[in-house]
View (tube, rainbow, N blue to C red):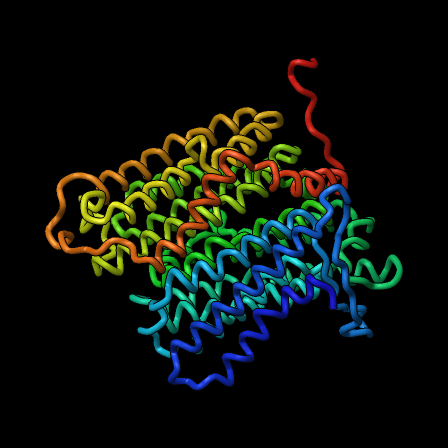
Length: 501
């Protein structure tokens, strides 16, 4: 067993330990879940330290036969793309556990069940980023729906059952399209030699342009639903409004990145001709997501829904960078996945604590929190500034790279995308003004500020927002070699600079 497989299995081991823990001992269940997640974080950091950023291709590779008749393997490995997303996952899970220490106690099922679902979700998220066998990826892609469905439906609030069902149905529909494409790939590979699901071998297959188009759409629609990209986004606002803050962090901060990860890992690499064919149309969809998500965020009165719609806008930027098909765009999009996960975690953490104290999700019920709860207000303020890509905070670098990379190939799209920055300033600053400043509204006078546990939970998130804003080099050092490999596999090169013409 190599260190990557150990990272995958550690949360699963924690789930099994929780399964035999006495049902009524909630405190013990929380401690076991926290220890399991922290150990997983430590192992993933050790793996990152052993990772050689100068080497191309997958590292920590491991493969074992699963279904020999169909050449399906347990095959895992990581490159820079997978590594940064696995680190994002393993860092955010303990943050979620510490930050939402008591949020599982009002659910339909026991506290133990809540943390079993959290750890099972962590295992599936790490595994899906590590999978190098397409069929294995598909199985995990579908399996991760189960813990999310029960986390929303069993521990959420409001219309949680409807939101969980809508999420499940949308995801299953996308999964069926992907399954059809996966079967198609295996049939084609069988005709060209030994049938395989290995992503590296599949990237060298010769597939006709028309066939690529159909297979590309099967993967892309599934990923666009997961991302979520307009017009496949409609499951997200209900899920974010109904889920607990911790669940929302994992869904919007990590799980949705499976969609944009898949676009890079499979759409660009396996179907390069189809990628070039559909790229202009996907650029249009990403621009609609940027503008549409921002406008809807401006008009939201529910705090959770507002954060969800900002994510639709941010995912538009990520997809824009991916399908700009430039080195800067893809690197910026990958860094954006990490930065969005961190800033979303900060927003949902601080926003969740505000909601828990005020017992309301309505933005109009807040006001004057800067005077009453200054630490909580400042945390929310910094998270908001990161969401609008303020220079010096993490999102700025990634958004700049996305727009710069897009401009070199699609100048008009980059100019339109810049409007999203203006709109982001509107929805963030209006929210900050209404929730944090002004006179203290009735009902807010006695609200308590963050306690020690909550400060410990949000401190590493705020630190990451600042560190990646001022010094993104460590992340980009890992990401850039992967970008060069993907560009070569997708048979695209950066456009010639205008100054060189």
